[in-house]
Image 1: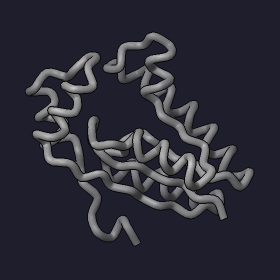
Image 2: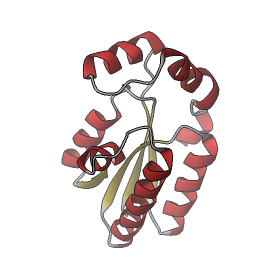
Image 3: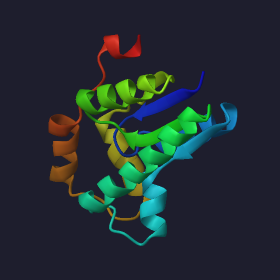
Image 4: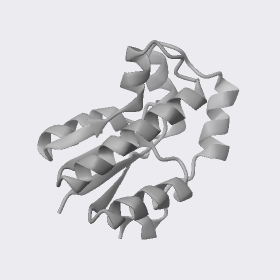
Length: 143
C-alpha cells in the first residue's frame, strides 16, 4: 500500500531536509513547492502562484499514489482542515497517510531563516504566521 507523507511545520523547521531523507529511505516521490518556485523565478511570497504549483504537485501525487508509489508532500500543511483534506483524498485512493510534525521553537525558526538567506518575511509577519495562522496538529491526527 502506498504512503503519503505529510510534512507539517513552519518555514525553517526542517521539512525539506526530512523530505529528502524520506525520498531516499522510502523510495518516494518528493514534491517541494519552494524548489519549483525558485526554479521558475517566482517570488516566494506570491500566494496565488504557490497555490497553483501546489495544485499541480498534488495532481502528480495522486497519480503516483494510484500507481503504488510513496509520496512526500513538503507543503507545510499549516491547518487541520488542510491536513484532513489531504488525508481523506489519499485514503480515497487507497493510500496510507503518515503525518510528520516538525516542532521547532520560534526563535530557532527565525535564526534558521536568517542563516538560510534569501527573502525573509518581516518579523511581524513571521510572528503572525506562528501565532495566528499555524495550527499545530492534535494528538488524534497521528492515529
